Image 1 (tube, helix red, strand yellow):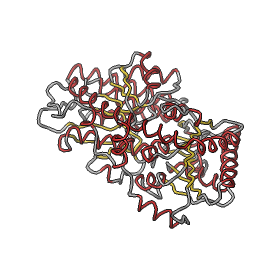
Image 2: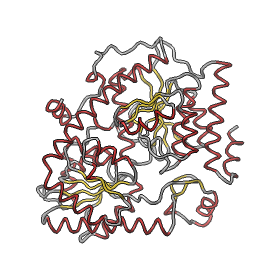
Image 3: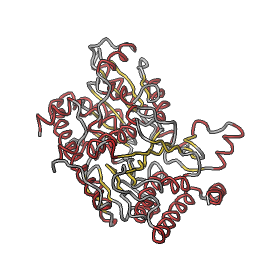
Image 4: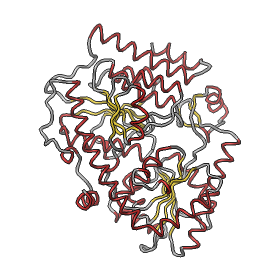
Length: 485
């Protein structure tokens, strides 16, 4: 089966479509097998619950890794560490963070549909951990790959849960696949906007929160040490920038480019992984340069108005290295750059939280600084940052990567924050408190879903309260709960 499917994929005129068709075919096959023989791996009382984490592991994406680490922490806190046995999909480098200790790494080294089909069978359930799960702007194929895990689990009546997922614009093909693969899954969305998109599709969607709100980064002493090594005096206010290349998506499989890469060394700058490549066109490159120039011009003006400010650039994913370097080259004095891969996720977030102002095109850069009450301005490529900022009533602090007047829009937003900092900080604190509460409620719903799918599973003996379904909380989050709850 593996050889046949791989050959069909490699010789297809539409390899992305072929992979999605393979995933659908394998979900159907798993359902047929279940009707004849029962579940491939049935949970039995007394043994740990084996859960496969469908995630973007090993790609060096700080936000994606934090989400998974916090899911692991929360579920271990609820069920007890000895009662869970996790495996995680790994699409890139092996996971070395301490947050993944004790997690089996399912490193993808073969054709993904058949790999997932074989590995999901060994688990009692699947959790889709990816935040940008129901969206087409990055890749239909990637969304289908993760949601297929839910379909394979549902085909055997196993727990099938999307945890803290976002929904946005989807192609008709992805909508059809999601309706098929997720028709029996529980989808716990990270905002009301996502729930509102998925419910009309007939899916079992409920509103929850992102899982990164409880993340505890490296101590501030560590980030202070790193920043001092790069010229910070320990006192100057820090203006942090998190750029991206918003214009080289989606990724697509391209066999011709893959062959040219292997034989001639071409397209290295566009290679995403395996046979997948980023989008490239003259129009996309112009848009990228316009975004960078507007970003840099606004920051240059803001720094001139605020002498003594220390600018830094943070790359939230290894893929952001080029964007960080390109932005730095446009600024008057090249700021220090702190990029994922050079620093781990605990250090990256600790560095971010030293900021007095954050300007970011990365969703999780904004979210993970909110518990430290760092005011933020988003420059967004889609609805995610707008959904987040809208939750605390400041969508005016969200700009668009395609804004032709980005320089003026961003500078005005920076000036707005300077005049309304106290209100922005207060709204941020209230938002963190509410999102942590929702995360606790998500944990309670997760327990209910396990009980629905596995009636013999002994539920955790916890009070029926959201506070009892959270992992240990960082001191600053506890302080915000005490102030605003």
